[in-house]
Figure (tube, rainbow over the protein chains, first blue to last red):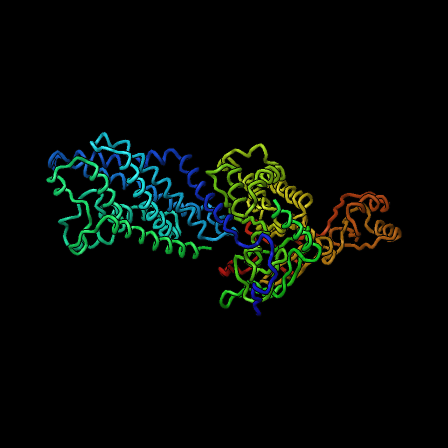
Length: 287
Length: 339
């Protein structure tokens, strides 16, 4: 069979990829994620219940055990972790909806369209990141209840870090979803992946003083590098005693070196880019 | 707007010279298995063309290659004037696709589903609303435009998908088993939609089916079996190849009746069930035949060869309606099933 090079064919009007069209596609896929998020109120509520449970039930329960250091208690420590938790869970759920899309055929509608998969994936990522950031930001309402002071600058910083975290977790979720062929596997993956990732990220307890093997796992966990900056900016805005700061350290240490916040965020960005490429490959395997 | 106009005028120019679908030696092999073995055919613009055959015959593989979802192992195919191997994106932009499985987002409204599709297929912003109104009219769902797809019945969802396939004004609309699993009334509605699309939008319709009665709506039919086209013609011509219409009579005196008929110029013979008269149009012939036999008639049966007869004639097997599989009598017992 002889292959005709496409360069020898006459240029056809309207058949070539146009940047404006691709941007519209990204916007449309993004819009769909938002419509679906707003339309399923139960998802918004259930996305709040679990973090609230961790914040108040675990928060009060552990406070007795951990005690108060310089006026700072476990609830205040765990608060940034719980905000991150709602971001991560919403982002993962949004990304894993690709499994649903495959089951109900809509993934096919997207993949056979004459648009690039990058646009679809960008739209999906932007949509998942937006709803996850929104969900995390809703959690800020609870800040006064646990004694965390919010300033306008802090809110901006938190939203920026949430967004970065959400992008990384959405691309990670899309990558995982592209490997899941059956709906039944979905729940298993959520349990086997999401919970360990959250527990071993520093969201719920400080990462210092863990046994060596556990330390290694936490340092391989991308979430570790996203939750530490969130806690740093929130704690920086609080009136904390030096004793409390020593009791609840925030920065990630790697081989005895304390990572600055910009390096932690850079690591999150690198994870996000790697996951984006993996997600793209995963999607390309389908259809 | 200008892009659309130039696009349409280009399509018109091409329409004058190019076939909607043109296939030469198209082949698809999966390892040792030949799913499609070098088929040739072409479809002209505005035609309704049906691929008829059992599951595993190569229908879906062919449609996948034409829609650029599968790469041909050998041979050439062009759709809407574009080569499927080298101009995949251009092909996809100029075809509408309706799959066997539903591909709607049922958490969105019909309009939102259509808007999503319009953007994915590059319909200009100014055109989207007009096209949505138009295609919803074509499938008579205008009053359900703002409803969630989850409130649609199976037949309505299927018609919405057909409307969606037409949204970006494709030159060729591919329908893979568009009526499978639907009740006869809904099937008839869908066929009305398809014929209306062709008449009003001038689209070429390429569809696969294993329902014999449906293939008769098509302008031409290709019967495909074991990856090869074994017959390709207009429905009437295919039937004519199988045999003529017959009218079978039981009368009070068959011998007298036979003589009377022969005297009247009919070709007739005695058969097990009475008298069989060979005619060109069974419906029109019944009256004159009964009038000319001259003896009391007990029963009359008129028969025109159906596509079932056609399929049986060309393949030696019947299409099994409920599974869409043509299976030789004993193959199932041995668990032999082509996939």
